[in-house]
Image (cartoon, rainbow, N blue to C red; front, side):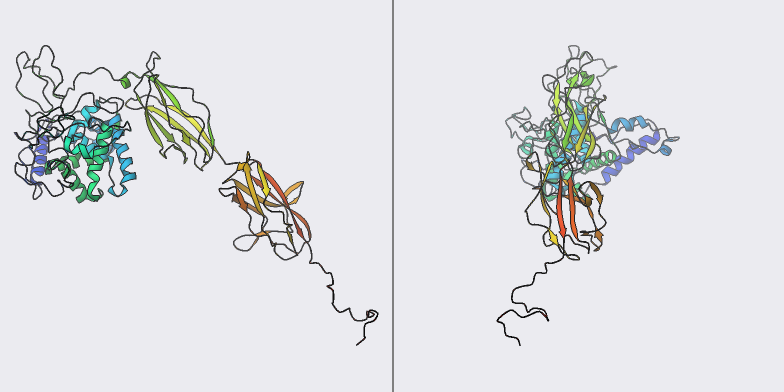
Length: 590
């Protein structure tokens, strides 16, 4: 049976649109990619050279072994339609908004993977929306976000046995370690990796020390690395296409993923975990064991012996099942409320005052507690901390956001804050991942670096003749509580007197870049060792003793004396006496 494409709407016009989509996808089969009526690679067809690149995927030719995938297409309307586009239009905007919602933890996993790849493989230019598009068609965003606080699915997401019966033939490669099948391999997890590919492509995306294909953080990061291999630049469309085909070697799959990629690029929003929209049509056909469907081990209800139909179902009903009320193929297995779903509010967990000097680490960390409506602490809940405002402060590690899981006391503590060079205030915001609840905001302040002592380096007297320049430059050392005070702001002013800090209008001076007289210097900064060397000083024709005063942030002050006097006129020994002066006794007169 041919695969279903898109969500068919009532009415001839909508049916025509759906039919056109099928025709367009069928007509767009790339040369060298043979597919059957279900969009899978046809038996005996050769995968593209790129599809098997790397040679480490057990010969499957794709990360997923070309397992079934969801073929539902995005709504015709974008998630953020313009006001004019909705006038007189019968298409539901609500459907577009629902499809644009991505479960919070799943969305966080995609974005975190993009951030990681941006650092480790910047030339790949991986957009998180591509991971979201693949996650949509592979598992319906982990079955609508049915994941725990760590990002692990509540039950395994398994594809059908790859036993060659309608799908690829891949014998067991993991002794059932990942897929529970010791005879044949099956695609596993939110991104549907076959075990042989996961063995080399798997990654630890949530920092728990494990590489679990059933964890959305691990799977998303692994998918990102898989797509970016072979030096690909995904900002180039041809290379992006090749990357997608290497994931599942089918042009129909490529077009479906690209449709969701474009849709998500137009706008998405976060929805609570477990509430994501579930697709309903699989490339495996109506009666296939679709990989993204409920776990094969999901128990049946006492009244209904047959197992729950998979997404895209429609198979025959078994004994005891009412034909008039078939089980919904989109309904996930019943599970108890997640810890996140029981959270009612956030409480502060004794966070102290957040202040630090520029470049220093804050002594206090932000800590919050997740609680039920009755005030009971809730463990294993993901809390996101974000730095908001005009600041260059970061968390330890250089990130502006961090996600932590609450401990047994319901407490999550953010990483230490590190102040940048920008002074002033900013906000640290704490929110619950997967819930629409009011967050907690914490005010933080970065103060300027300070010095409490200034001393002059060297003790040479600073003198100059009128109209000349001082031979020595003024050099200083700044300290704070006995330690070198680096990168501290300072000001140097030639003042009128010790009691009058007004800028002098005569005597020594500095020169600006244009050679003009300047008697106050601002924007001075000590170096990393607290040292400060002032520019050259010059003197006008005024003689006398003058004062140079240097001050720093924090109150350190030093006053330096400068002397301007004529050169000495002592007569050197052996110089002829002036005319008319009596010659010394015993000296011959010329």
